[in-house]
Length: 156
Length: 156
DNA sequence: GATTAATTTGTAATCATTATAAATTAATTA
DNA sequence: TAATTAATTTATAATGATTACAAATTAATC
Image 1 (tube, rainbow over the protein chains, first blue to last red):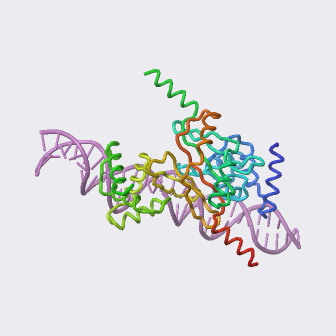
Image 2: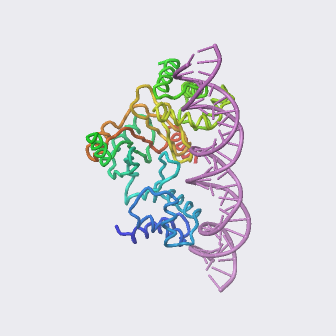
Image 3: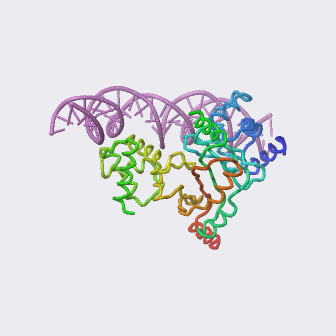
């Protein structure tokens, strides 16, 4: 799906939720759609939008991200580093993607496939909890860092 | 396992990591062990410790929690509400427990059993990522809120 | 095009957390 | 047991992310 049609779809969502379609909001959404990187902070997104629309304010970016979170266009993530990050929810995805957080280098890799369908069923049945969504992050060592660590061991 | 023996075990861990065993640290650990509630914030823990040891400072509680996180005595959690929460890691548990976060009432229930052993294996094999730990939170509607919602519907 | 309520801007305020400097103290050693 | 020393604590200031505010602007509607 191309960017223009995704933008149109989000425009429609805004309209249906009776949000106004302002240039600032469009610019922010466009940055999110065009940027291939995920889990950017509000500040980082602000910087990117500012390149195209220098007059935009940081508070507007925060408000827009909050609105997009409500609309489930983006997912707001909190790791343990004290600032929120935002991921564009993938086309048609019911859930967030999962994350692989490397404890060595801090990199964050994404897992697109939903690995939790069975687990959700267990939770619903065993805990009588109606699951709407989930967040799953694995903490560990990414492949690159595993190699590095191995090389360091050999070098000693 | 009783509180005294758990406290002793933690004392030993502190000693082995060459942390000093101060009354403030003991008091904080004791509050965590005695309190049946989990996912308390630093501020809440501070209030509880202050009842027993009124002279303790907030910064000390923060530092102690950081130390206990490093020692994996507690797990630091970040939901999307802008303040960290701390869970005592259960005796012998390799992993965190999972959380069920109710979108209606905000309650947080715990799931002790590890539901992700298979999933971890998939991640290790398919993504060549060495899994050390994980964090899993389900977002949805708890049983109590499901009942309430149902009653409200009937009432209308 | 006029109206109106929503939105934006820049900035101040807030809140959680961390840093600092001086005073205290746990652990070690004589 | 007392002296030593580096770690720790305290109160408070500083920081950084996020939110609130008031005045100015503007998108959507009629």
